[in-house]
Length: 260
Ligand code: NAD
Image 1 (cartoon, rainbow, N blue to C red):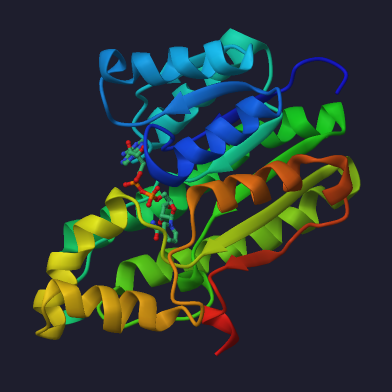
Image 2 (cartoon, helix red, strand yellow):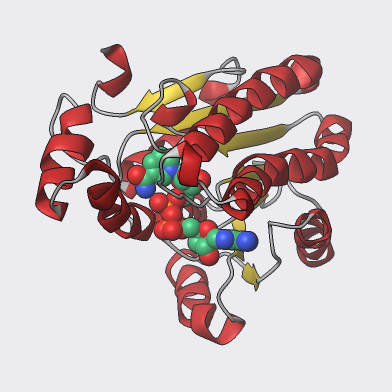
């Protein structure tokens, strides 16, 4: 790499985003962490990244639900590091309910965070990437960007939307050394998955143990949760020169779920 490159990972105070931040820090990128938690809470994790990997890391609690929040995250990254070379659109939330009871505000929030935030962040970084003739945009979609499950209308709609956004932007920037890909994880054991188990149990009339066995792992032919480390490894590969021709794809990491 010519100089240290900078990666912005939305929603990286926890779960998959934090794992990807770790992976990119280990690969030598300066890191912009983001999440809804106060800075004091994330300070130990931020410092640990710097100490372990000899890179610089900052944390911004910018709210990805709002276009101004998204823009302020990119502005903070550029103020700290001059430019954004890698953007990982990862922040996301889930809500599980039959559509007739699905709260309007949950629909709006899921579409804003899981889809629109990626549009605003991409829009803010793409000109700089094109001008430098190098960039990587990675959208964390889901197996639910490729197939559906009941009771997740907003999430499945947003994740299918982000696969479409990925393909569109990939075509627009293909001649400029910028790749745009979606990663489509199956179930990964993170707070997002843990929190949806009681609601899924209620919506399906099951116990929580049945949800884990008969809904979550039943979807994955290998009967295992995918791991944040596996997702980080793929993100790091997509940022490498070896992945320069991979663009516009939606790559499943789902133990075979979407092969069904
Ligand atoms: P998580 O709940 O562990 O982490 C979510 C992150 O998003 C946290 O850092 C949180 O602070 C941040 N966040 C939430 N609201 C925010 C806001 N308004 N502004 C900024 N940041 C905000 O979730 P996770 O499981 O790591 O999920 C990360 C992404 O991966 C999501 O897009 C999710 O849809 C996707 N995904 C997860 C799974 C899974 O099984 N866990 C599977 C497929 C896709």
